[in-house]
Image 1: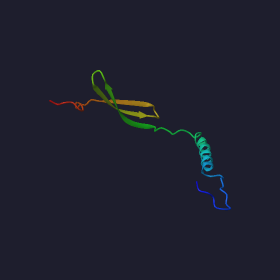
Image 2: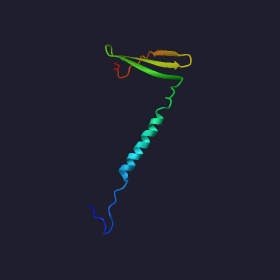
Image 3: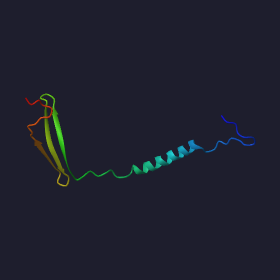
Image 4: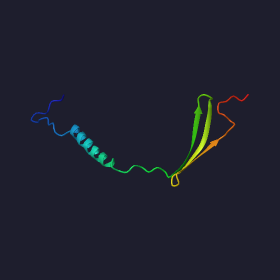
Length: 90
């Protein structure tokens, strides 16, 4: 540890630990205010795809899924494809 110069005293004042503590306190207070905000809204309509794998038979069932939020309708269209991935064609 370095010795202070003659006639000068080493000052231990509010340094980085105190500043870090104050910054953390401010961030926690601001974060608490953000928690009172409303949650995000989900899309009213969406489309997607789903795959269901049957372990017993080893088959995949693929479907296209659409949802209409205002009328609360769910549509599932099962896809029937002859091509099965990773199947040996002999």
